[in-house]
Length: 120
Image (cartoon, rainbow, N blue to C red; front, side, top):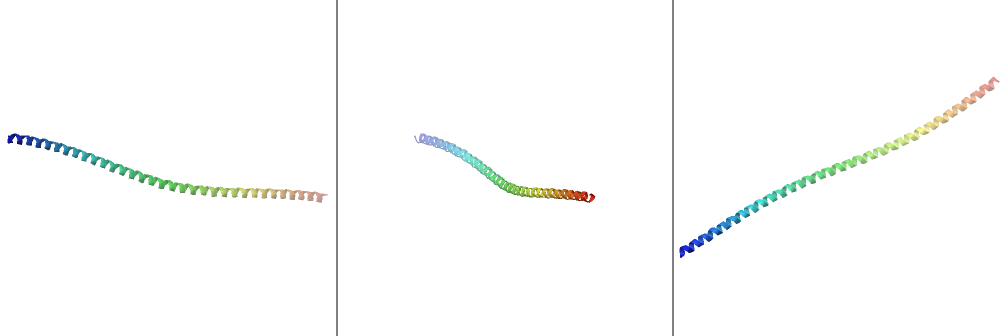
Protein backbone atom coordinates (compact mmCIF):
# COMPACT_ATOMS: atom_id res chain seq x y z
CA UNK A 1 0.00 0.00 0.00
CA UNK A 2 2.76 2.38 0.90
CA UNK A 3 4.65 1.44 -2.25
CA UNK A 4 1.65 2.37 -4.35
CA UNK A 5 1.35 5.65 -2.51
CA UNK A 6 5.05 6.36 -3.09
CA UNK A 7 4.73 5.54 -6.77
CA UNK A 8 1.77 7.89 -7.11
CA UNK A 9 3.66 10.61 -5.24
CA UNK A 10 6.72 10.06 -7.42
CA UNK A 11 4.54 10.30 -10.53
CA UNK A 12 2.94 13.46 -9.17
CA UNK A 13 6.39 14.97 -8.48
CA UNK A 14 7.59 14.01 -11.96
CA UNK A 15 4.56 15.68 -13.51
CA UNK A 16 5.09 18.77 -11.36
CA UNK A 17 8.77 18.83 -12.33
CA UNK A 18 7.81 18.59 -15.99
CA UNK A 19 5.30 21.39 -15.48
CA UNK A 20 7.97 23.53 -13.82
CA UNK A 21 10.40 22.78 -16.65
CA UNK A 22 7.80 23.81 -19.21
CA UNK A 23 7.06 26.98 -17.24
CA UNK A 24 10.77 27.73 -16.97
CA UNK A 25 11.13 27.25 -20.73
CA UNK A 26 8.15 29.56 -21.28
CA UNK A 27 9.71 32.19 -19.02
CA UNK A 28 13.04 31.87 -20.83
CA UNK A 29 11.29 32.39 -24.16
CA UNK A 30 9.41 35.38 -22.79
CA UNK A 31 12.64 36.82 -21.39
CA UNK A 32 14.30 36.36 -24.79
CA UNK A 33 11.33 38.05 -26.45
CA UNK A 34 11.55 40.97 -24.02
CA UNK A 35 15.30 41.29 -24.62
CA UNK A 36 14.70 41.40 -28.37
CA UNK A 37 11.98 44.01 -27.92
CA UNK A 38 14.25 46.06 -25.68
CA UNK A 39 17.00 45.87 -28.30
CA UNK A 40 14.51 46.93 -30.99
CA UNK A 41 13.37 49.87 -28.87
CA UNK A 42 16.98 50.89 -28.23
CA UNK A 43 17.69 50.81 -31.97
CA UNK A 44 14.57 52.83 -32.69
CA UNK A 45 15.54 55.36 -30.03
CA UNK A 46 19.00 55.63 -31.56
CA UNK A 47 17.47 56.09 -35.02
CA UNK A 48 15.17 58.83 -33.70
CA UNK A 49 18.11 60.57 -32.01
CA UNK A 50 20.05 60.47 -35.26
CA UNK A 51 17.05 61.84 -37.16
CA UNK A 52 16.67 64.62 -34.60
CA UNK A 53 20.36 65.41 -34.95
CA UNK A 54 20.01 65.45 -38.74
CA UNK A 55 16.98 67.74 -38.53
CA UNK A 56 18.86 70.05 -36.17
CA UNK A 57 21.76 70.26 -38.61
CA UNK A 58 19.37 70.91 -41.50
CA UNK A 59 17.63 73.63 -39.50
CA UNK A 60 20.99 75.29 -38.80
CA UNK A 61 21.88 75.05 -42.49
CA UNK A 62 18.56 76.61 -43.50
CA UNK A 63 19.03 79.44 -41.00
CA UNK A 64 22.49 80.18 -42.41
CA UNK A 65 21.13 80.05 -45.96
CA UNK A 66 18.28 82.39 -45.03
CA UNK A 67 20.78 84.83 -43.53
CA UNK A 68 22.89 84.59 -46.69
CA UNK A 69 19.84 85.26 -48.88
CA UNK A 70 18.87 88.27 -46.77
CA UNK A 71 22.37 89.67 -47.10
CA UNK A 72 22.32 89.08 -50.86
CA UNK A 73 18.93 90.79 -51.15
CA UNK A 74 20.30 93.77 -49.21
CA UNK A 75 23.33 93.88 -51.54
CA UNK A 76 21.08 93.76 -54.62
CA UNK A 77 18.91 96.58 -53.25
CA UNK A 78 21.99 98.71 -52.65
CA UNK A 79 23.27 97.94 -56.16
CA UNK A 80 19.89 98.86 -57.64
CA UNK A 81 19.99 102.16 -55.73
CA UNK A 82 23.51 102.80 -57.04
CA UNK A 83 22.38 102.09 -60.62
CA UNK A 84 19.40 104.43 -60.24
CA UNK A 85 21.68 107.17 -58.96
CA UNK A 86 24.09 106.60 -61.85
CA UNK A 87 21.22 106.69 -64.35
CA UNK A 88 20.04 110.01 -62.87
CA UNK A 89 23.58 111.37 -63.07
CA UNK A 90 23.89 110.32 -66.72
CA UNK A 91 20.53 111.94 -67.56
CA UNK A 92 21.64 115.17 -65.93
CA UNK A 93 24.95 115.03 -67.83
CA UNK A 94 23.10 114.43 -71.10
CA UNK A 95 20.87 117.42 -70.38
CA UNK A 96 23.94 119.52 -69.62
CA UNK A 97 25.60 118.42 -72.87
CA UNK A 98 22.44 119.25 -74.84
CA UNK A 99 22.31 122.69 -73.28
CA UNK A 100 26.01 123.21 -74.07
CA UNK A 101 25.45 122.10 -77.65
CA UNK A 102 22.54 124.53 -77.92
CA UNK A 103 24.73 127.29 -76.52
CA UNK A 104 27.50 126.49 -79.00
CA UNK A 105 25.01 126.53 -81.88
CA UNK A 106 23.69 129.91 -80.74
CA UNK A 107 27.27 131.22 -80.47
CA UNK A 108 28.06 129.88 -83.93
CA UNK A 109 24.96 131.60 -85.30
CA UNK A 110 26.01 134.81 -83.57
CA UNK A 111 29.49 134.52 -85.06
CA UNK A 112 27.99 133.91 -88.53
CA UNK A 113 25.78 136.97 -88.18
CA UNK A 114 28.76 139.03 -87.00
CA UNK A 115 30.83 137.79 -89.93
CA UNK A 116 28.01 138.67 -92.31
CA UNK A 117 27.79 142.12 -90.72
CA UNK A 118 31.54 142.66 -91.13
CA UNK A 119 31.39 141.55 -94.76
CA UNK A 120 28.78 144.14 -95.41
